[in-house]
Length: 59
Length: 187
Image 1 (cartoon, each protein chain N blue to C red):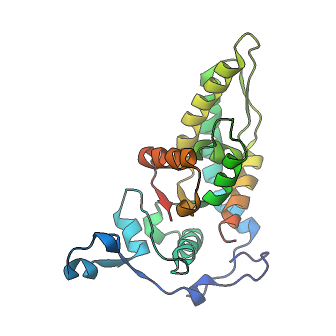
Image 2: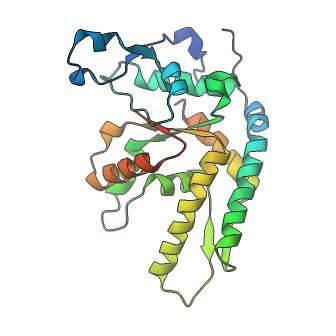
Image 3: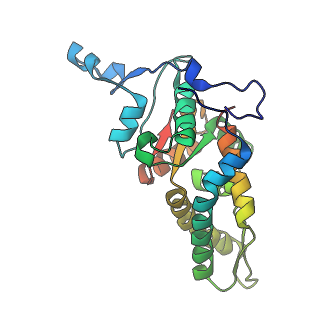
């Protein structure tokens, strides 16, 4: 099987839709927890953390 | 695998499919059981439960998980597309973190995943006792992480279960593995 090496932009494109859905789910859970509960993470941060983590799986 | 990694390589050129015995060798009572072998991707496809990979050092456990990770990322039809994002937690690192905090509560898989994903939550309530606030936060994390794993279609791989020396950490991982949905793959 001839597979090209994966690049960061390819991974970003692959994960964007999933992370968007996931981030919305996190926001809903935080909002329904209490009015005083705040989320200090944005979608981009989660995306870049997920990509870093997937890449670490190869080390 | 990744174009910007040092010494990147195509795992398909190195990987040899291993036929895995479906039960640990020590549990075999007759020769027939030795014939029930399957490759890892087939086992994953047919199984909704957690799968534990056992084997001697160098037998190919980590390479097999790398093959699975690679295939999930490059082939949308691999394992019928059940998983999209493979995440590996190196349990030796979790073990190290827990050993360095003997008087604090132990890091479990949920806490580790929330740290990995960078989920930062604050509850602004100065009237509440800090311990109660922490418990409330932990409960919320306990609801968030399973939903994130499901939404992201994560295959969670826990690498190096045998390297955990701390009893409390080991118990936390076993409890989590029993509750986990989607399944995880400790090796």
